[in-house]
Length: 135
Image (cartoon, rainbow, N blue to C red):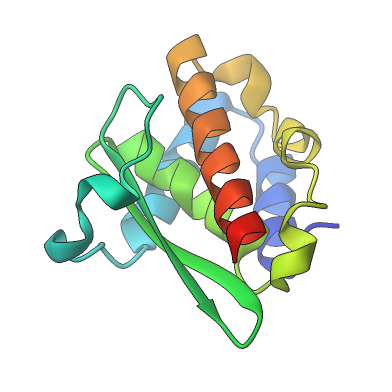
């Protein structure tokens, strides 16, 4: 049930054999994301459970889920971009139906992220799901 944007990332990952290249691609995805305005880097948008500073600001319009995000770590910023590709534009009710662990496993992230990064990624997914559920 992945979005077209996430499928493009998955296809690129299939094409890239080397994990160094995949990490570079994730970092490039993060660099391509618009930065979150400093005025939104507040405790209400901060994600607990991440080793890095992470902020996710939900943007729900017309029943569709979206968010803006940022981090002080380049790889985490890239992971935010991957999550954005996975969730952005979905109807709010469908956000909970996304099997994020399975979709992210398609990219092989489970085996290649440190336990701290994996915990942070889980915390971001939990925040996205909770935000959509409350909308």
